[in-house]
Length: 152
Image 1: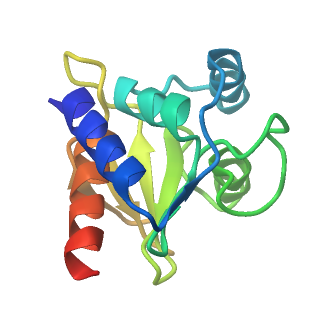
Image 2: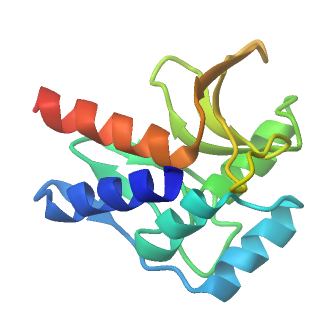
Image 3: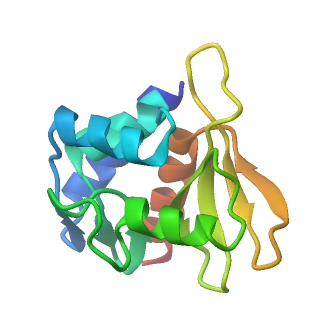
């Protein structure tokens, strides 16, 4: 269901006048990002990157690939931010995909996979504590978009 959730979320995003995303991103660049991080992204996150790259809708920001230069510093570059946060203890299997707004991040934990290759989204607190947020990036994205559009 996660890939379907991601498709639904992408449709909602592209229909939203407040959406501002950089995508699409070439598959080769996505592959380079995975190599740089030493992990494999789940299918729903790959779809998000291929279609949208990164960006925001109504102030809700989703991190990803911002340009051909994967080392560009600053948010919403998920690759750079993940590498920076690893220096402070972020588990190697994680990739940061959004901020909670209170000093914590949402990250995909690629050490865990379901039979469709999807990985859970976790909240990573400032002290390194992990809390499961969603079973997949697609479900996380759809839920966040629905909450955002409902609150507008």
